Image (tube, rainbow, N blue to C red; front, side, top):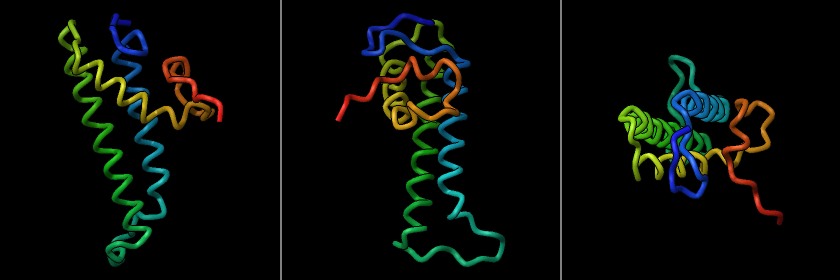
Length: 118
């Protein structure tokens, strides 16, 4: 791993970013499954719960893709800087919700912050 001054102490490898991106995208797709319309079905009513779920899932997918793209670009330079650190911190914040998910890619759990007890 590349060293960093971020709260997590290090940046991920390229392969770790890919694995986490694929995991998050899989989760957003699964959550959006009830909103998927078959050809010819009318759109969901604006403001309906299904329309909101679809919007939120699309937004999370786009944010994750954008953060990963920034991180790939930074890692690709060989000298990742503050943009990489900020992108990684945002990705792990998003991913923390799935910290205990049994399907979280191997090695990812150690990279995610531990949830404080309630």
